[in-house]
Image (cartoon, rainbow, N blue to C red; front, top):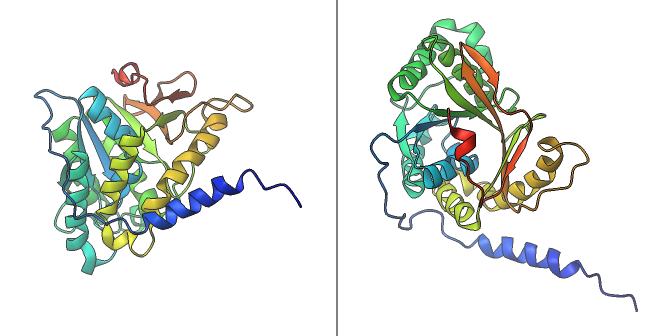
Length: 289
């Protein structure tokens, strides 16, 4: 008789937990009581290519809100490609943002459309109108931090949103400056420089908010796989962020970002080396501009 595999229970427990989680409700439950940001709070803007991206990449925005008192506002760049679902997706987005305590701004009735790299070259008038909308939101809100996808995030709308934000930032006055946090989901970054751990409480809240996007997660329950993705980010980040061959940080759930500074009309380095921030570590030093 062979010895029992000591890892079988571990794998079985993971599979059983995932199966049981499929019975959890998709939104429709009461969100925590909203706490309004204090007067004069710094603003962080999330430029989400689609409704749900604010939750997927929301680890750092949520910590900025809860730990540093940021006024976090999600800007719905688009409301999805399906016109028949846009009203429903806006409602789902509103519920998800309410759960996290994020503000929400529309970019127009039904959101912007055709936010793809090819639109920039093939339909410059349409593209410029979209740039003007985003540039106006930045000028009005004067954010200290902006979040948007990195330049190789695979999905066409994610790639378009990156270009849209670079153009919109370029339309700001020369003396405008803000921290830029580039995000990843569909296409992993080759050179992230920041790993942010989420507490179990924060991650549970991100999943609850993501479950509000019921029309999307019914067809693909990616909200339940987000913890696995964040665990794998610890593996990737241990080498990509901290350096090849370095000991892996003792983190559980993490999200990877690229932190830079926008100043004098372009990107500037802000970190001399990659940083991993545990859920218990103070973020203040990283986000003082």
